[in-house]
Image (cartoon, rainbow, N blue to C red; front, side, top):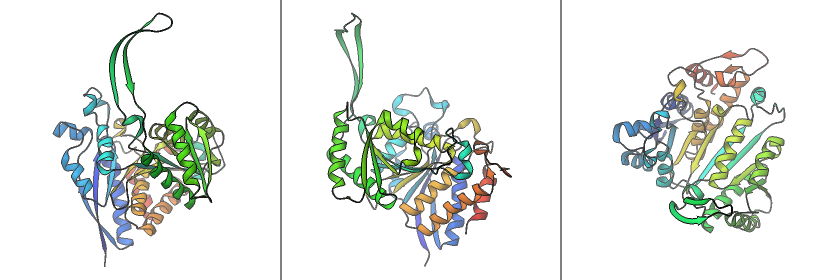
Length: 367
């Protein structure tokens, strides 16, 4: 009997609608080949939701996401909405979806495809395969913030004036659950976990180290080491091939995952998964933004969204065979020379293609 999954699709803004359509085409082919069905429900979030409803995340969208087996998201935002109030910015939809679905863990794989190594600014010939595990609902992005006036004067006589603050805070439970997940992921990979922090300055980072050390007692087969965030950003450039799994806080993960994406050649190749407790819907989206300047031109690279869909099949739906087939199809398509304009790298016969042609090439390789 065919398995049926309820998928909430949020196309979003810019190139979001076209790349999600590409991913759905691939998913539907995979569904037929591997004997499952997808029930697709589309919802608005981001700038398009602001235009229609006056807010970035309508309640209907959040409820639809909660009722689904998984959420596939395109991208949100764009300069059109740069001047709206901060609480109404399109990106608020992402924060509210993560909070509303309880998505505390963000997984961002950064893989160097051998055929695209020339696109990396490092020009590295060594394989790069890093999984970054980012805490998603705590830290400075969700801490207390505000402003106040003060009459204080600094040491050089300059008035302090208005003070603005953002607070970094983490509970033991918040840290422990993400660290445990990172150890599990590291155990399934090469058994090497790196905690990135700023423990020489921040009390929260020292707590991350303490808890990671305690959890390591349960996962003795996993090697745990530590790097300060400033050193980690340098080491990712100097020796990216030595990293396996990285776990870190919300803000540091935001920075490192984008850096890792760049060193692999193109942010247009990077998928991501946002997960909560088992049994709740995860959210899957490409790492890149909405790129409104190329929307509708056929230049968008659909592979990050297609790979995000593969992560959805594996992590939320349990369709591991279909997920592996999609990932192999993408790899084979790259190896066969198909390139969108952001990855025009290759020594031999490169086949420049648009968004739909790249999608069709992946489907042709899907077995």
